[in-house]
Image 1: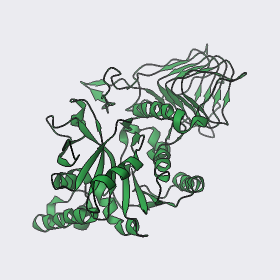
Image 2: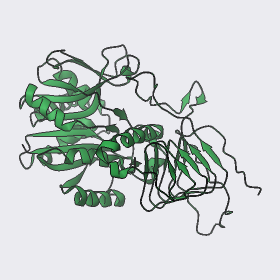
Image 3: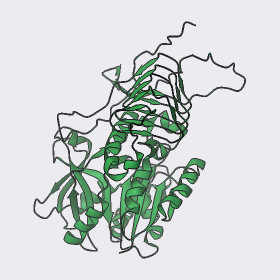
Image 4: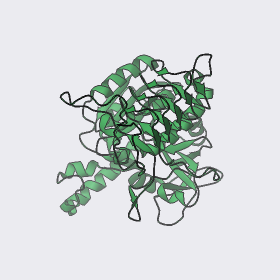
Length: 432
């Protein structure tokens, strides 16, 4: 059965809660558990039998890092991977409708749509088998999972028939409790979905004729008509029609909206590596660092044998970790240097950053309630009740002007306070 996959990667105006990290690379390329965030999606899609092509869709301008990643991914997974650039943010449904000819080319009988800002086991094969048992060419599947009653209000909520799993009611971010089953942002469609999206497009055009001041994105009516949201505009109308089903997963799932949620997602993926990619997990070896729990270390990293890493640590390319260093629940990015006896907890250490000797860098974890099996990670705002919300600590990329004097060899890094940073004050312990 010929299949395709579409991964919605958004654009630079999105992902503001991920700053400053998204200033340096497009958010989908940010490394989570050692590989770019979107690579987890591509790996899952490439494993599905019959997958003919993977399309990344968003409104990022041509980007060197994205181009390099696509070339590398094609070589690794031996499957065509292309980027389709939207001329503007068209919504989760507008983009696939705009590029429907590209999606349908080659005779795909069905296609997956995945949001790039989620992490999951991606049970795509299971969704396909579920659709083959329950649906037909005119029906579609949403991946769902269970949330607690309070947090369910932050997601699309699904009411389904207990026996058939047909979606009877769908509400995006309701104001009152509707259901504990939430939308995971992963879908299986057939070409018939474009008829339903087209009806929304036609309705948008008619509304513009009646009231030309309804434009959202610009005064260009055609552009406004193409802004279509799958969740609010399509799923709400399809619910109860016998054409929409939910496949509920008990596997892990989380959104990646903030930098804090990236550390949590890294933990989930590292846990999965024991089954899917054991070769990516570091092991305790003679002469090597002490590994506690699940840890990823890039082959080019230099780690002192007295360092203690883990659990949930990802060490990037070219990173240097000195003697006596302790790293836990953190992501250390390309080229960073952790000098002797530093302690790094609940932190993302930016590209080429340097942490001086004896420094302690500690953030506040953003984990969901460990005592609630259905708890999800909260997407915190920058301020709550007039106070900065505690979160992980982020060290931005280290930049130095060519004419500037070299920093003191033991000077502690610069801290870039951002919406995702901890309010804790970091101090240099060097006698200078």
